[in-house]
Image (cartoon, rainbow, N blue to C red; front, side):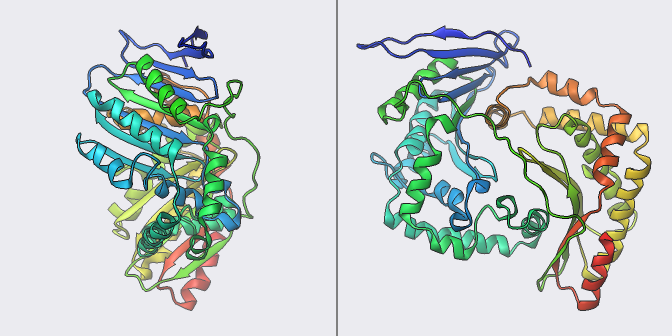
Length: 459
């Protein structure tokens, strides 16, 4: 990370205004790729990445709240609130919000995760002031009307039903429950039919006021943007809403804490009349702040990150037992997951599981050869850069980095960290992660005898 000292900048009006702090975090060449952060009085952080060669800009606001912040009675409240912020403010109706961005050919959306929520709009660079005004209004001025809560409840229940109809998606929620149990990390982001039906407008309003304070928010903007102009426009929008009330307030720190996973070797089966059985076999991974995450990224790529990966070759190419098979990692503030997914005919479940388990055990015991590690490093470096080729991806990177790590890392630094991973690093993390007893989640039309045998797969 390239870091420069704080530079104090003051704005003046008819009354003296509190001082904002601006810092250059990454110094790009000729201004290209420069990342700057301004912290406003009131604790709101604004980060931008400048890319003058494009004609677009993506503006987003990240909230330091996700489904893991919910009590059991509030299950699904974060995602419910994400929907409701599009339903209108004191000055804009839901149609006004969508029509404003549609009228300039932009796109607007949001997503909720277990530890954060993001609202964003991607527009032409000349329309950035509009995007800033609309998204800031949504985040600071939502009215959360009773009638909107009732209408949106139906849409969210349909979204839950849609997820339930996709076992390839649903199995990952099941695996989270297998690993975390009734911990908030083990509950679905969408909530359940019962919890969504129980949420009231008053509960959601209280949740909104608690978690959408400026100290819990990060504004991120990337593209053909001017940092100072973005800061002025965002500040004006938040001050107009009366959101920057306490000039002494400071941003909250990135998440910390320690949460224990459930005992390894758990098996959860969900019977469904599907054509395929959907499988996730996995074990505890690494927290997103763990320095070994770079080595785990290389290991994950080599095992199940592409068509040349071990699992793809063994399960699909050589035996044709599955169309989709891959591995993945999920890193949270204090823990993580490593999983292998496969979708196959129910009659092939045990063969697929045996191959996957054998590969994981083999790599845990003997590691990967140097040539596979070298190929995985090259693949991971390339995919990292290619994944940052649009302003939306850049906005996601700087926003999430500020919220989750409290710092920024340049692309060159990221590539350097990946390139510095050694074969010994990969073999060490393989022993630590893959050497653990796995847990298993399966959705499909499994018979009793098949279900009994599945427990043997994690023994």
